[in-house]
Image (tube, rainbow, N blue to C red):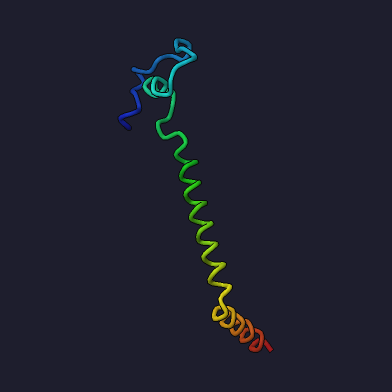
Length: 82
């Protein structure tokens, strides 16, 4: 059990809550997840890493050495199929 998760007996019934409670008050009442939004932040970090990796691949694949190597692989594959 997380230190932020109150026990069932310490939770305040929904109808007794003030509609203008802060997120800290909601968390203490057991109505707000302390990790809310963590998934979105993690998704953003993964997307930034993926974009960086894609950029690196573009730079590598544009090099003449890699282009010649890939062309050789394709030509070898096509010539052995005959």
